[in-house]
Length: 135
Image (cartoon, rainbow, N blue to C red; front, side, top):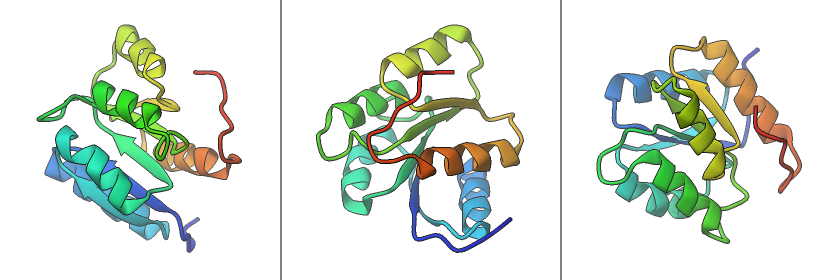
């Protein structure tokens, strides 16, 4: 059920249709959103926007999402921000790599939007610094 949240979600995706759908979806649920369309802008945007959660595509211009995620998790100011890799890539190796670089969740874009919203809520409800095992 939609509600009002003070939490901000940073969407990092170069596909305007996906970005717009996610932006609209989370705004309808009361979240604030911001977005960037390439990997090189991602770290700068994360620092400037101070999001509570990041939705990150893998295939991005400038720098791929795996590299972006690893850099976020190595940055002492950003590492506590949950990162959901949201990609069209379905391979087990990609999922394994996502967790190796520090992703908090891995979802395939074909998933229903309610699953995306539920995963965002789950990660945002965790105490800061809490982590569950991958999977």
